Image (cartoon, rainbow over all chains, first blue to last red; front, side):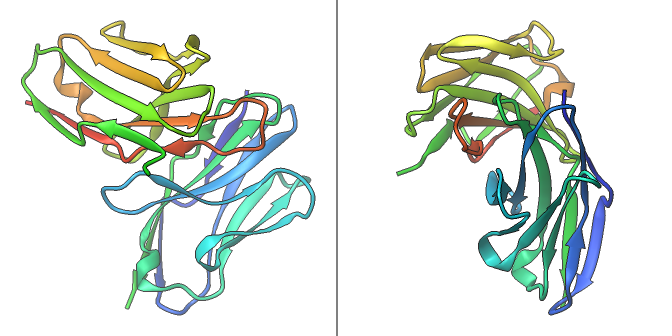
Length: 113
Length: 113
């Protein structure tokens, strides 16, 4: 089975500052990795995904993530955050041959004006 | 066109009642899921159906019964509702063995009083 650990439950950051949200995963098989965002009272929206190939993945809204197999990490970054980035962020993993999605416990990003 | 739609969006009911949440996807996916999100935002998978067959049934009280009349629908019926069932329930879908993420509905906020 796979599992995901999001190391930070809450991350406050000032507007226009850079941010990194950390995610580590555990799996004995090859995996696909995802970052989702959840705005207040809404469903989950895909930010980006890693399936194979380049370890640096670019997503929507200026976010990017880097897959590091040796460190089993998939950290999410943005060079300059906006107020509108305030939301809950979830890292998720699925086995490359299956279709179960395992989610981390989420990181609440608060952008301070 | 909404890809994954759930109804109702809000549901307030008394303890002991029976209620259903409906989910439909128009993406042509063969796998559908129900997730429960608690007050701490933790996302826990409840059920997964592939081509109308149950493939994941996590530790969920048997008061919860999923029903999949066809590949595009996965409904959740809950009997004898309890206070602890209050949560947001998300439906999602994906395509098995394809490089796709899970697509989520907007959620149903269930409040048991």
